Length: 292
Image 1 (cartoon, rainbow, N blue to C red):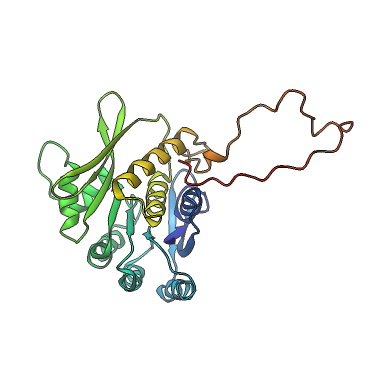
Image 2 (cartoon, helix red, strand yellow):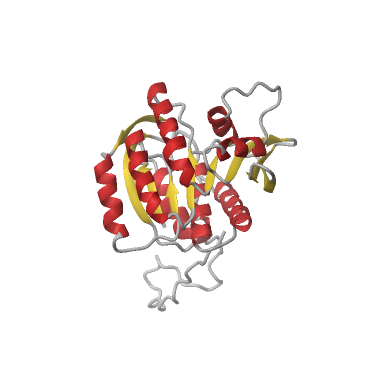
């Protein structure tokens, strides 16, 4: 798995999300740093993009040694970096590419528009699946939407298809009874849907988590509809086990499967008891295989 993304010191999203989510799907991650957020769990204050030549050097060096089975493109900082990544993608047209568009309303408007123009022109034509929140994608792809109702997933997918994207996974549709829905769509049809209960907490890093594990599942040759269903279920479990490490938003617990809530067996030795006998050797730790 090759991932282009920014470092997130809060651990909410970026490469932190990619590494833990993809590893949860038993993938080895080739993490290409494209920049660094200056942020906490409350908000993004700034972003510093790495030079495009450095991104190219990182990627080409590791790609000469290891062949990826899928590629994720997260937030990479500027139009020049998107152009460099697009050139790299052209050498791997035979493998899935998942492109995730996060919320960029925190960014300077001119820089944001330049970035989105380059994303549409250079990266989307080589993208297999575009992932994003309903509000973020509709505002970008359908800026002149004039209907009273919000655009459907198929309509967003049709707008993405103009730029060459065959499939779009749209999250965050408001549904009745405090539910949220996600839809996998092509321009002509709705391929899959999932609905989960809305959480009271506000999360950072959910989109990076979803797109990362989806990409990992596609790397393992899972078919797209099954991969989307498994990825959405995995994200829901991450949110159920989520936690609030600071004073801001909650973060998905991407390693929820490693939690052990079992009580120690009756009669087990207390490790803090100095009178206890020597501990027995631990059994081999079971390695999870695509546990979602």
